Image 1 (cartoon, rainbow, N blue to C red):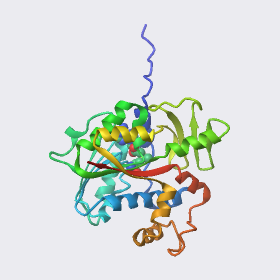
Image 2 (image 1 turned 135 degrees about the vertical axis):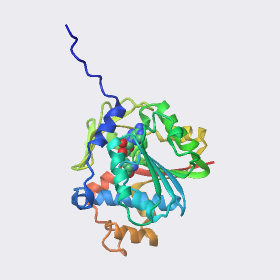
Image 3 (image 1 turned 90 degrees about the horizontal axis):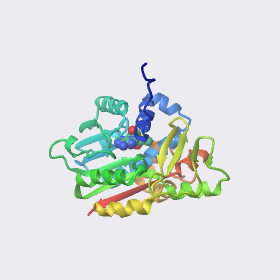
Image 4 (image 1 turned 90 degrees about the vertical axis):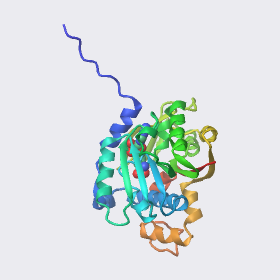
Length: 303
Ligand code: SAM
């Protein structure tokens, strides 16, 4: 008698890759109709601030967890010369390639690869002699916090492939903010009408593998994520010669940069504010503003 086929349980990495592979690329028109359009615009503005602060003309960029290539236009504006984008989700990489092909202005050279950037060394898959001037990791570093081994693989992939003096800039969920909200909530779940975060326990705080489930309307449906224990990230990063030079929550980044001429104009162009002279009243509604506060931006310099 043949054995009943038993499906192998999916690993967290497969679950994350499936999750992103199943999210279609919707195009500009549909993106504007998204219920969290303002929050997405604000998040894109924060990424633009980080990119403009750390990227110069002619730079070679390594974008780990690049997704569908949503930052390509930002890099074309920064006049980089070369970008390598890597992501574990093969469908996203195909969409990034398509987006790159359709770019018309200020085109740079680019290569895209499907790679588990936190599970495997990336060096042998990069173009020969490639050394990045800066490394980007946007909204993806928390997936590495499943284990110490993954955090080390990630940091090695960054440090080994970036020049000394180069900067790793990242956007990550702010664990301090998340845990504060968890402690203040009566159960294991908190959020509002556009996002929710659900934990499995309220009294165990492991440094690695501290899993929670994240939902964000029109973006993420119950995806497993891991808390980043920031002091540990900082400590291990230092072992890979990466020194923390910047760390601010998204709301603080707004306060710090909204009056700056260049970023103020960008806020207006990206539909985050309706009047450049009034930055006290962004167009984003309070629930999306709260959800944006989940994140922080940070940067590490290779010394
Ligand atoms: N950086 C892009 C952006 O800002 O638009 C995409 C962000 S998306 C929220 C997170 C990305 O991390 C997904 O594309 C996902 O496939 C990728 N990711 C998660 N785990 C990964 C891993 N182990 N290696 C490479 N990419 C990974």
